[in-house]
Length: 471
Image (cartoon, rainbow, N blue to C red; front, side, top):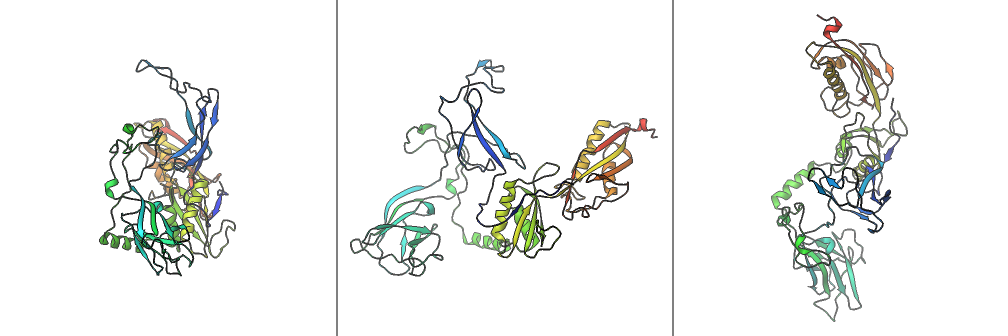
């Protein structure tokens, strides 16, 4: 039996929500060999999503123009000579992908853009020393991270911190709560947030928005190519050759009352706490590239067979075409980080890879005279691989059940149901390396209660009916 992967993550605080399944490194061709490049930042999480990847490329004197792979000096189809090029490559150095990334495009010299206008030096008014003061920005909606506000109390100008609310603010915390939709700023009452004091030298103008950006809405969701030039000038950039390669997205107008009610109903139905086994399974499925999840209450990977109060073990099967899909370290950590957000404080959560039991079918098949033996063999192998697959196998095609029994009659039926099969005179099952007697069901739960099966190389002999002496 292939034992469960020893990698088991205990879920705890401090993790980010997404981890890369594989480590990708970038290299440049020097004319003799590939030189590794420094990766400064990766917004794609190892090509698991769209984003910007910033790498430091050596000076051109270090690199060498060359012809590599199928790129040659002459194009046989066009009949033209082609210049040698500089070459970069990305390769997997460690780990692996459950499913290889599908790249839509790789574009150089791109930057992210946000639909917004910038405002500077806007006077919001004067502080008067009272509790719960309010200040109003002239433009909305506001991008919260862009807002810089200073207050001069007569001793000196100080920058106040912008927060979403004042619930966690202390009496001396110089915080202002921003409502991005309305553009309103709220100061504290001396208990939750400090009180801005008056400035006799600038009684009406000591609260200033030094800078902020506003904008957004559906109007910003312009189609690809709609942005064709820059309004201003940037050194080194040709303003007339600037355009958006893909459609803008993410802009939305202010939520209506009906939309808010609809969202509230959805949140009431949503799981914001992981309590039951089903809760853990649903949340694990939402964490990333997860095809199936199985939560085992009172189970701890360090104490197999024992019931451990407060422990929950979640088995994760990645969405993969492999016969035995196994999650990467990155996927296990991503699921851990997600479940840790929703678990109860007293619950100890572990996320593990599946335990797999190999199953091999040895059979002789009599093919009809009008059937191609090679095609029949391929079809039998495909039928067995599908039936025994952890994600799409089982009787209903929803995945082999954890600990599910391998029933001889059902395996025989799958083989017999293949188009071109006339009869199946001999069939035996080899489970976990042990060959079992014909007509016997094999309990996977007896090997491991939470194990899955996977299909190995089957031994299939196909004999035409004429050669087998079949009438």
